[in-house]
Length: 173
Image (cartoon, rainbow, N blue to C red; front, side, top):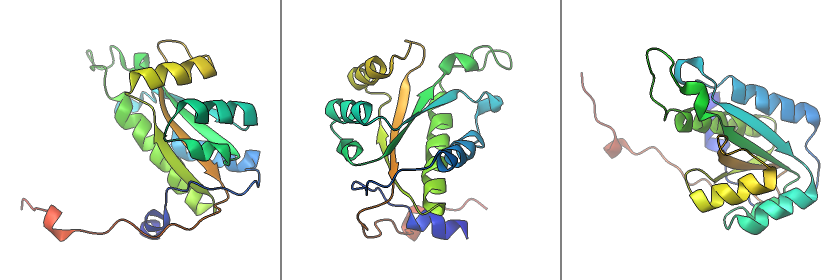
């Protein structure tokens, strides 16, 4: 059941050195690419990083991505805002964050389904952080990095933190 997968998702910050296979990466990226996007513009691209030197450089510049020091994989979601210009009589720019967020969430859930752990580290819209990540990954100015996703075999088991809160629900019938 999908709800069980959602409930089992945790932000994993410690990983075993077990590599993530190319097939596992492809499955996670396929899940990402099946995410909804504004007018099906698919304003994203992905970078899969297994190079330890690059993972450590990203950890050096991102204060909340220290788990990349043990993660065997980082998937970077890169936004492509220009893909949304002029669609349907001038669809305004600005839907790429929702699109990239949906793609990021699909990666997280697919990782859980495969027995892997993950952690979403935001980059966009923090301009100084975006610039540092862009420099390391040699991204162009029109391709802002949206998120870094650490992935690997968990070396910890954090407790459940979410819950259903009825008081936050209202109905219009």
